[in-house]
Image (cartoon, one colour):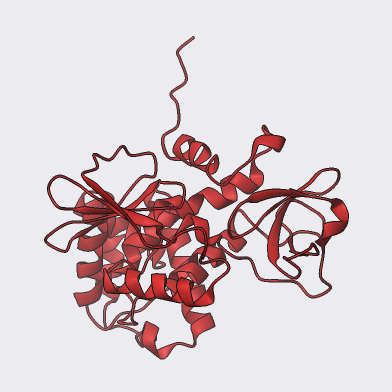
Length: 305
């Protein structure tokens, strides 16, 4: 993939934003961005501006083409900068490198799922780890799930939990189902107010997702971060959950957009790690995916021999 630009305006602003978001030197961000866009380095990239027909802007693309381009770019940028592709996607989401398409949560979810399908979660056989299926069980018929283990017991991931079912309760549909991101990994359950007035949105498992400061700035938080809490408020209760209420899910998504949070938290990246986890087959839970995520983002140093 090679992206063409009419001038240096977007690339220069995007590199500055990406470097600041990821804590990188501007020169590193520029060269990584250049390589992700299909060039040898920033020097070659800089000489290309205006030389070819500009690539279509994001807002000019059909949804599928937009998602494909952004997922390719996120994977490439993560690889070139040596960062998690989820972090690269988040940095790109507000960088406006390839256009001014409105930032929407559903688009960001589609891009994240596309990244996983191209890398760590390719489509697999009907009864293999990571396959998509449906439940055939009382009160939950037709509910989509991701298969972890098939047999006795059978384990699956739903929007709300990792659950153990009988093997006959898992149905592999003839037509492949799309991968989904469990709502428990990205929708807020409530928020804490910190002593300085900042608000920290947390998941159903009371793990931090976002910090919204009083000046309106946003911080994407590591889910294992300790938060000093002055006050706690909830946005819903277990009598009416977003995975069982479409209107509540929509309301939460609208609130996130209103707060300036139409992107994905770090916690979302626990999903592929949990799917591939084999060490604790009977002790899996969505919350345990955080341990795997922390280990992946902060590898434990190997002691010298």
